[in-house]
Length: 380
Ligand SMILES: Cc1cc2nc3c(=O)[nH]c(=O)nc-3n(C[C@H](O)[C@H](O)[C@H](O)COP(=O)(O)OP(=O)(O)OC[C@H]3O[C@@H](n4cnc5c(N)ncnc54)[C@H](O)[C@@H]3O)c2cc1C
Image (cartoon, helix red, strand yellow):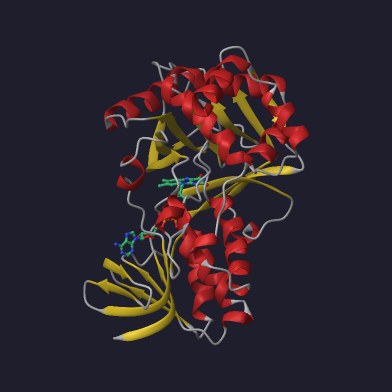
């Protein structure tokens, strides 16, 4: 059985970002690191979008970036200049290729394509079994997400950000390639929080994603019919070709993912609760978490102490409590935000970078009653 100082399970966003951060940091140069994934990461399995101020770590592999976003609701349909932010898009395959290439240059990192079938964790050692081998790791970072964990408890509601997206191509130049539709709520809500993303990469091509923040997934046909109706009725496009599709379901919950961490096993990425509970965005928050984790390891702090609850956890909890009970309120909440506050403040708040004064400014844009009720329900 081969032993490693660190074993990272999963070469997705979290596993790759962590492996790269460890590989380039001289603190870990004498440590042996194994990265395991059942998949060789040679396919384009997702598209990541995120907002960012100025230059970012992945600007060299960006597929597209926008300086303007659009928000549409029942009463508003506005475009907003978002400087100093930009809304950025990366193709999964470009990210995987770029990081895997970097990992080849780190002699202490080994990437093996094997499916992990079990992880046994004890204070002495961790055993990671794959279909063909067993590895020993002093410390394990595990990004395999088991959706059953948050669903086994009732204290914190679990919603999903679930979606299907179509990459379409038109013969005529029909898209405004300078503007990303961040949220279009002007579609039937059917008692839920439902919206469309329209992310044009050229005047002829766009990713159109039908997205819900709700408890239960839909049948595949329902997403597809909604996208089709949106393209023809809202965008007025009859002649188009579907080039690619993607689908996803991202947990939105304040459930404490960290309770499964031990002295030598840490869950990372979505499995570690690194997804922003109120939005489902994970890519940018994972970059931030990796920086914090590297510092945590260098400071030799206990793994169980990594990640703590703060005021933003509580704000997310209130919003999720509301959307869980009254899923139809999502459109009015997001519309009130975009109507009353600028996107720069919204992005800053969702990035968890706002001061208390800015939090109050942000929250006061919203109709207070649902939040007061949710607060009282949590307190009493
Ligand atoms: C289609 C799609 C679009 C998305 N778009 C966005 C977006 O625009 N912005 C955003 O912030 N987030 C987005 N997300 C959320 C996304 O899940 C996260 O951003 C990010 O990928 C989470 O990183 P992760 O490392 O936790 O999980 P993943 O990236 O899913 O990585 C987990 C890895 O574990 C591997 N694995 C699983 N089981 C095993 C096993 N038994 N043995 C070995 N390996 C295993 C998988 O193959 C995978 O490589 C999207 C998700 C999807 C599915």
